[in-house]
Image 1 (cartoon, rainbow, N blue to C red):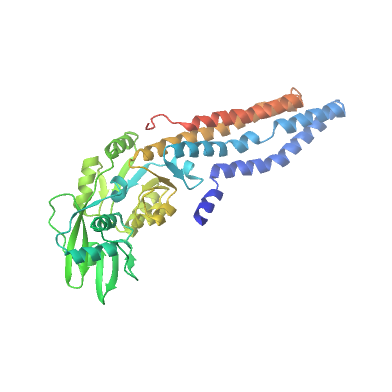
Image 2: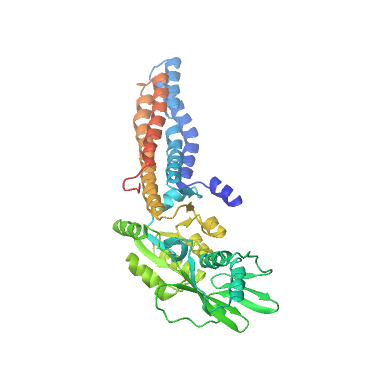
Length: 397
């Protein structure tokens, strides 16, 4: 709730600029009205006529259009994103998303579906598989869920071992009857890596002197290739950063035709990689779901997480999307770009309105009634223009 409150109260730089300008309006406008009245009196107008003209200046320069320029677009864009199964958690995401030029995907649970399945655990005894399942309950890694589901399908009820510790990027461990048990990266479990024959993932298990590998398979999201192609067609630089093994990541990258990919990356490696890109002037969107993606999500220019991701990952992300497809990624980029353009247009409309309306009022061509209508009309124009942010060309259906 604290994170949500922080996100709701955080304002974008566009809104902050509008607020600062609106605060300057009061003294500037009052001074302009006073100078206008004095000038008209000086050239022979009656006090009554001078005051009427000054009042018209006060009314016509109301900063409503400027104050509405950004917030109304944010509300409309957020609503459009919500209808596309995307929930924004950071108020300034629209502006940051519109600057993105590089998109980084995690593999497991992001490019692939979050529900992997256990393929082979023949190197473990049934008792060891049960231990692995109870250890997996304490893990936030998506692959651990496959072990849990496979054990539950046997009718077993999984309860976590007490005092189980999770080491980010490595695995989980605890003492069982005084003997250390580990589940996670093969290196962490001191288990030799297998000779690869396919693109399966594997998880190491060790209990005392006994060890083995658990093989888990994953499926790409149905529209992954289509969305990646659409992103590349829009000249985004697309990469994969994964903590998984070289061959798995390479197979996925080749299937999706992603030329840049990195495997066996720790949470620190991912964060440092993003920091390096940002230092070179790139604006990076990080998309990930695992506990080991949280530092990278926090370091990115903007970040996105599936709703199936770990709680800490969703907390670090600027937005969360639901569903089994990657279409929300493209919709998010298109809608935020459209929202940014509409914001700029609204500021331009507010500026043009003032450049035209204020001189007319100062020179006495506008009555207070006309000034009120013009002021209301400018706010309506800004609000109506903001409705264009509801949809962007090229969005998925």
